Length: 164
Image 1: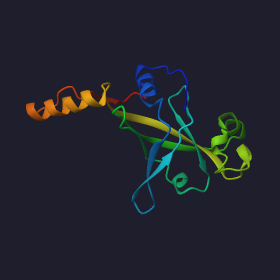
Image 2: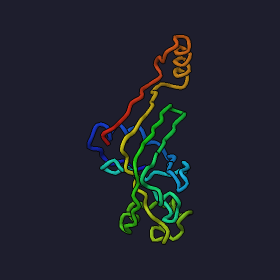
Image 3: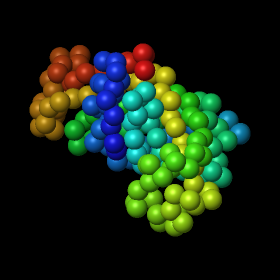
């Protein structure tokens, strides 16, 4: 994912947390009120903190953009990020061309001019993250110590970002 310079401390923290993720789970509420999650490949975190994805304009999610959740899960480094926000559908040809990648071609064989190709702009409102900077072995010792002490010890950071 391409990361642009962020202008606030909270956005910069978010950028650092998600920069190495290739896949996120996007959750929306369908017309029956059910929560539906789909894997999405983020392509850009722009300078305003929005996260961009390619999508099919006819995809069900494009009809339910008012309330979204975007989740990144990194078990190997114990980094987890949950973003709540909303979405916008963007069909600007210049923007699609600027973000185009050959990795998207299997879904959109006609390239950036594919008739069903659109961009989903995820606009985050708040984020919550859990981050443990230690190795897996250190995390296992921290869990064991937490069990013995009956309270969390050295399990990493948990914060909420509200000024995105």
